[in-house]
Length: 246
Image (cartoon, rainbow, N blue to C red; front, side):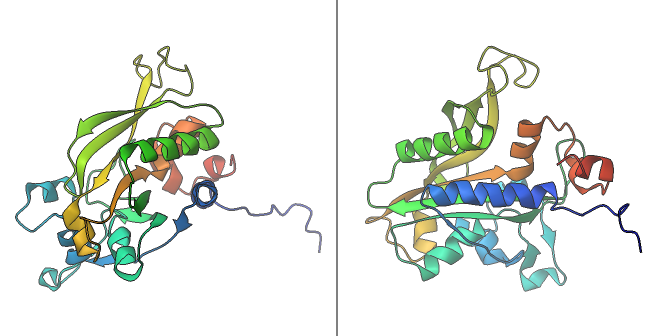
């Protein structure tokens, strides 16, 4: 049988990106870890300083699994992995936790009901936001292939204190202003901050002795910026014209 017309398959773009991100962080001293996609209310919310009556729960449109009172859900972020890891490991440590997450929200060019996120966590004796800035600057430089400046803006996330939004200098115009960065020279890329003492306590770590930083970034978001992809739904469309480009 003549097989010359058969095309060889290849790995989808998202697993490619997850592998590459893991490799970059591994070289920075991070361990790649995983956790369950079906989570408990405790790990997804309570252990992350988001109790049942906290208004921040509205930020995560949750897929609850029936019966709802069983407290099981599809995780809304990969942050539960950090608590699970802290329960079974003693600091100092640094981890990166990539994986699929789920949000019950309307789908459009920048939102999907399922997407991939990478959660980073470093805990040690003298860890600060300066350590995080160095780590992320190195990561962005490797991922985008050029020097990337980053800046912090104050923000609120219940599992960190202080919390920050992180912007990176536009890799296309290098801060001059273009259509990618909406003429600002900066691109909002992720949320982060110093791990809240209550989260450390949930993981069995003494916050008076240890401290750390955490960040979460959408892997599709990074990939869209890197390759100029304008619609997140393309990743899951099954359209081979898109898939075969990568």
